[in-house]
Length: 429
Ligand code: HEM
Image (cartoon, rainbow, N blue to C red; front, side, top):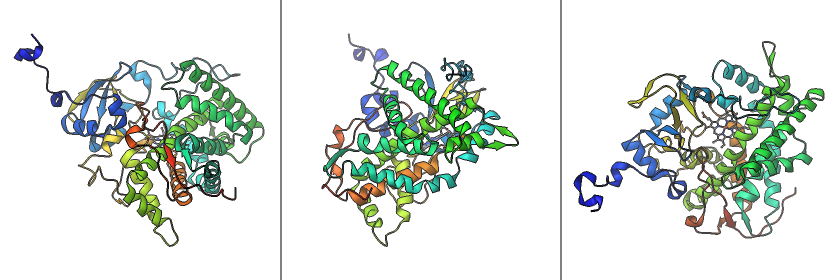
């Protein structure tokens, strides 16, 4: 008497149920599941591994609209969870300090004020001036493994580059940067790592940042933290708490994302030899320098670091793609699905580094559009171009099927990326 023997109890055919989300297979390749959702259930309520029910928005047109919809708040208070709830301790020396009230957790008018202030310090010019330092960092990291003929590009390259870059930019002295590398390592490993270790690392980082901000107030420098302290708008400044929360979100938002841009991007190039060859040729003398620029944007669209945009909560009942969303419901915009939507992109599953019509959502859209996009582009371009130039026969050391993906909810990235190449010389650094 199996259910299959009784028509009323027959199991629903798998294609009607839809794909199973958040499994190991899904973490490895979520794109077939997203294609199904886009077609059959473009705005889909699902239970997340945490048990919370949320709407997944997968079509480009709905995703773009949702990202710009002011009725979708970033403040977790709309889901019955105050923005401050998770931060139980203040920054040492200031009991009210709170790192959770940062840009990605707040709405206008607070968001408008903070974003305007940070934009005065974190300018495209500051990023452009930082280019030589990013190049030097990139070469130094490659120097450490170039003579060995093998490396794990996540551990040895993609992971340290953004953390050292952002530390430099913020003004964290070189001698303290390895502490940041350790704390950040603990945070990125949190999937399998000890929970207490993550909390301790956040606490240490928070304490360190509070002290650093205090020091920079007394002795300002030419760095971003001093710039944040100095920034003013109609006589208004960031408070010490706000500056600490800002430094923290810059580190947080700019770290794992960039690790994954470099990791996913390199992996995509190594598994698409024709595209990689085109790019490699263009990097030679007299080549088409524009291919690196369009190429990085295409790698973001094709397999970007941010699979789902961060949480949004409905402040009132609304409709997305014909589905009624109740007030308080969490909404997750699936950037990775929107960026493969055939309604928006020609041959969406094809990697084409010269793609021109490429308004992908990899950096988000609307008022929370990625503040660090110019820095991410700079690091991504330097990292991939330098790898291909210095290690021209770079190749995977394992079969693609043997690679493990992290399987987090928001981010998409590899745990390791073992590669081989002909050993080469160290650079002048
Ligand atoms: C926001 C992606 C690198 C700082 C965002 C958002 C996305 C994103 C999708 C919007 C999230 C949402 O609407 O829920 C990326 C990607 C990166 C990257 C793909 C690398 C390839 C960086 C870097 C920094 C940074 C390097 C800074 C150093 C921020 C900040 C926000 C943000 C501060 C919040 C902006 C706001 O709420 O106004 N990023 N990011 N990001 N990103 Fe990035």
